[in-house]
Figure 1 (cartoon, rainbow, N blue to C red):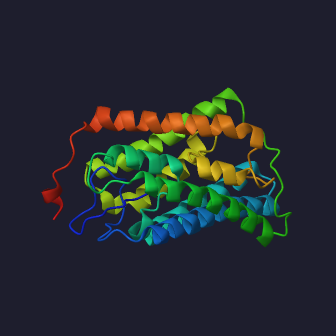
Figure 2 (figure 1 turned 120 degrees about the horizontal axis):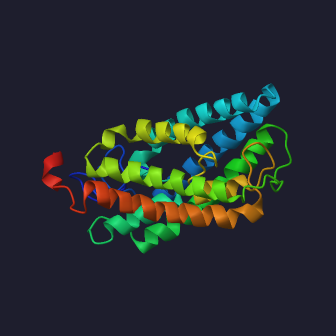
Length: 255
C-alpha cells in the first residue's frame, strides 16, 4: 500500500505513499514481499477473529478485537515491507498504481502486475490456512458467511474508494511518511463505519473464503465483493483527480 519506485532520487509521485524506496528491488523479492505481507495480513485478520469469538460472545467486542489487531498488524507490515515492494497487499492498489504511473518511466509494468497479483492472492489463501491451523481448525473449510446483500456491496465500494483516495491523495500531497499510520487507521475506522466491515481488497476477500470463521466470506459472495472493490478503486482514482487535480508533483521538490 505504499510505493514502488525505480529511481534513486525519490519515489514516483503517482504511486501509493509510504517509506521511500531508494532503488527498485528485484521482482522476485518484491513478489515475495507481497506474498508474505498479504499472508501475514490475512493471518492477523482471520486469527484475531477466531481468538475474539473464543474469548467473548459479544459481537461488538469481537469486531473491536478484530479491527484493533488489524490496525496494528497492517501498520507494521506497511512499515516493514513498504521499502521492498511498496506494500500493496491488494490487487486494487496494484492496478491503480499501474494506471497512474503507466506513462512514467518508473511506474509498474504489466510484468510487475503479473507477479504481484498472483502473489497477493496466494499469500491471502496461505494466511487464512495458517490462521486456521494455529487455532486447530480444519485447514480448508469454505465459509458459509453470506455477504451478498446489496448494502454490503455498497459498503465495499465506499471502503475501497476511500482507501484508494487516501493512498493516492497522500502521494499527491507529498505525505508519504504518514502512509503506515494513515492507511492502518483508515482500515480500522472502515471496519466500523462500513456495512461490509471493509474488506476493500480482492485478494483478502478470496483468502477469507477459505475459512468458515468470524472473518470468512461465502465463495458465492466473492464475485459481487471483488467487482464492487474494483468499482471502488475507479471511484477512488476519480476522487483523487477531482480533489487534487491530475497534474503530477514536481519531482525536484522532494529532495
